[in-house]
Image 1 (tube, rainbow, N blue to C red):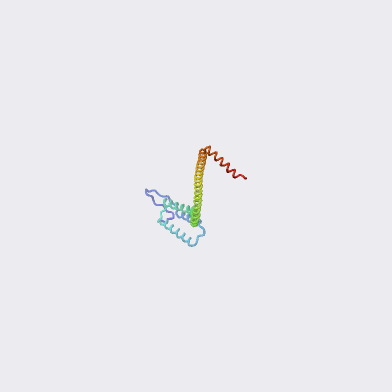
Image 2 (tube, rainbow, N blue to C red; image 1 turned 60 degrees about the vertical axis):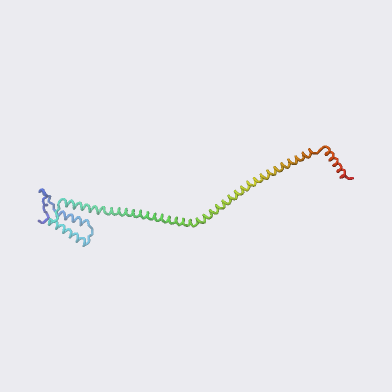
Length: 220
């Protein structure tokens, strides 16, 4: 058999498969593929012709049986290849864009993290510088506290001094009052006793004595 117009073998059960013009169908497919390609080089054309010749030889020698399953598989492979050719660049572009977005997002996160670390380093340096000044600030605050304590101590000492002076002044005034009262009482008691002890004769004699003294003192 030449394989150009051949009848397909029987399926299990004795059912005959339809007869196809293999050479005409394959030649038209090859022509369409060749027309769809543009400007093939010599090496590419030779590879295509060699592949086509080997495929035709295999079909003509019935090394490849073109039943419905093979045709369906070939059609499915061709559709898958065509879809891959059409959709592949779009998917690749989308994946590249998605990858670029992920890389940019990761880069932005990395830059933000680096910036945060730089800010933390600056803050730590500022904290270290503030710690150097903290000693002086602590000494100044301690001196201020000492001054406040000294002022409070002096204020309390003055207050105690004032209160003690008031108490002492009160005691001195009390003693002076007691002494004046006792003196006045004694003087009044002595005066009353002296007056009470003088008799009328003594009083008359004293009066005469006074008159005599006055007479002597009067100018002659």
